[in-house]
Image (cartoon, rainbow, N blue to C red; front, side, top):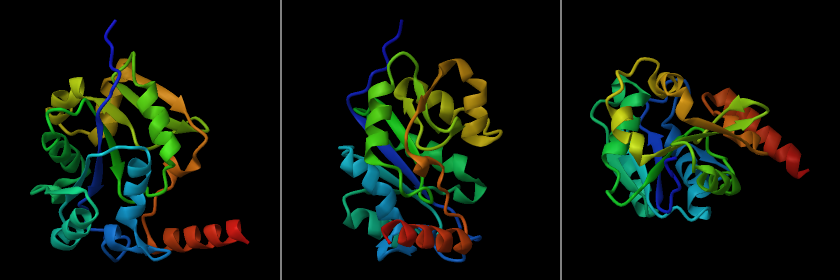
Length: 204
């Protein structure tokens, strides 16, 4: 049986979108004084993931500068207007040859717990894809073994990464985690307002 255990995973943060529903560049939007990109990166940094690739597109200069100043490696996706899947492929192509797996995280899911990242890293073993679930609902970040990188990059793009996962169901293991943040998607200003109110209530 193949062994997909990983000792050197990387993280790919997808930060290229136009953020049209937010009305501002999402990676730069501050949550409690900290840009969303840095919140998203924290779960990986705290989990000991040393290489973080930030895929940029819209407002690339500002997003790339922020990423670079905090030890992340920005790479520009020329095709970012064609959708998120192109950014996933750009990130995989930019991965170092010594990495053996990659986490994929959209920047607008910024509060995944570091413990979830560690659980996912420790779970990938018998199958090359592990996807976290909370309450039986799949979330982010999945971790994908390098053995599948080229297959992802050559996928026809139909339904994006979700379409690829549907096609490769036999390669997936699901991991139930005690982390509702894997489902927390901040798409709009209303989402952000609700998040801030919830965080304020939790501290009161």
